Image (cartoon, rainbow, N blue to C red; front, top):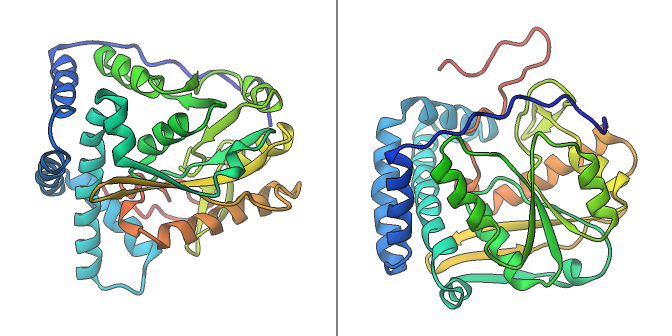
Length: 306
């Protein structure tokens, strides 16, 4: 793993009235009952499903590739439900980051193998892209006294960037590292005992990726998790965040044993296999609107005709 990767250009931040209006709206949502927020999220999700044709087709393609045994009607229904929980989870960030701490604690339940995160030593948290990932980050920051570190992608809009950054820093002890920075700092953080909240399950292009199965389809996947775990001498602890009618349930799963093995390809394939098992518990809540299979092996055509 290169310690000083080439730094991509950082997007120039900009601000406008739409960003400030969006943030003000999210602040207002923090004051509403959860049922109202979820009802609005249902409406917004239905609207997005109707209007965001490109993302709808991407999600349908992903679903059909991962669940080929399902009918076209089942696929369309699942994608519609995905858009609803996607919108609901986004609007929930209003109260996750804006409500008082007591209300947030009452709506987010932290469960599972809590000892896996409270024990001393370096921890790499495998937190896949489920729609409730920000609720998961808040739950861990509220539930544990240890310091957490997370990668951060700067938002183009200044107002939204400030809101997202402040929200992810609101609880506990959290340090954000921008994605264009050197990975050396992450290794040093792990070795010093910090817990790294890592989301390594997206298609980031061919550079530094390996092709391993994801629901039986070769998927370009960065082997960041096993490499950081090995270099940082960290145990890997999966965390899954599920949206529920009452808020969220954030479950800490047992640490993986004998991981990593030193074989980054096999270790990355194992990561995807465990991810498949997590998705099976709540398939509509995974982030299907991302082109997960965009990068193809040489000679293969794209799956996405959008």
